[in-house]
Length: 336
Image 1 (cartoon, rainbow, N blue to C red):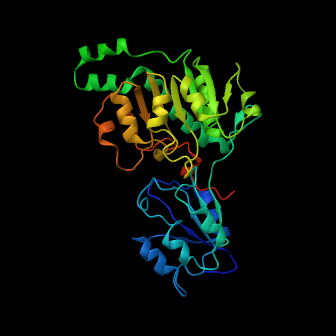
Image 2: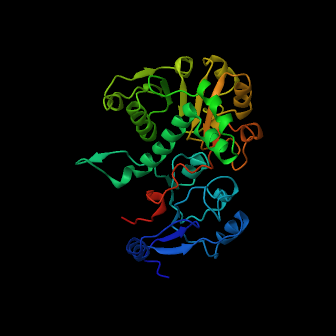
Image 3: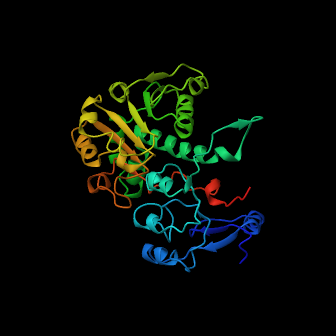
């Protein structure tokens, strides 16, 4: 192994597909070590002086924490950070967010952390490759929004259990999303892509974010409304979609107090991070009739799902698959 090339520890997953020409280019530019540690303790041991990982310059993890076999190994926070070799300078991780990364401690160690939020852009009328992840997640979110109003998951269950008559109760609670208020919590790349799709379905777009986004607002055909506070947008929403980062400040941003602010009959969609919602409070709000539609791709205690949500067939619960698509750039290693 030549040390004239930087050494990259590559933490792969079972579902990553490599374009042969790109993988060949990647391995030509770097000494690549394939990660195969059975535990975090073994990872730490291999970073010791003289160990297999003692001279790595970078770590690349394309799968975040959703794909086997290493989905339960937290390598970028806690104990492992104390044992990083001095040579380690950069960590690259696929996916949005940094809630499973101790960014401050990495900075103290002089390690740069990069993820792949991408930029949702268009060029000459064609989608650039960099925006695919936003589009894939936004399409999943739009499915969940439609489902929150029309209860398609429950209707399908009625078909599979031969309860056609039971499905007819939907005529009393199902609605078309057109003309209803969609409250976007977060209007970054993904939030913007979701809101644009919802506008095409005739929804009224309101949003809350730390700052107003006039350039994003200008992309809509009809005016959208910015709210300076979370409380303000929650009080007028027919459907609330979370598309914001998770941090200590946003932990349980929707809890008992916030559900009490909402008007009866609200729908909740979460494609961001599970701990943004206090699921115990959400379950109570559903049982009280305050919330009548819950559609989640993420969960507070993944991979475990709150039992009161799991047992309620009026909910739609997905296993954090918003970006799981062969079209996703996270499925392909691109050294370019």
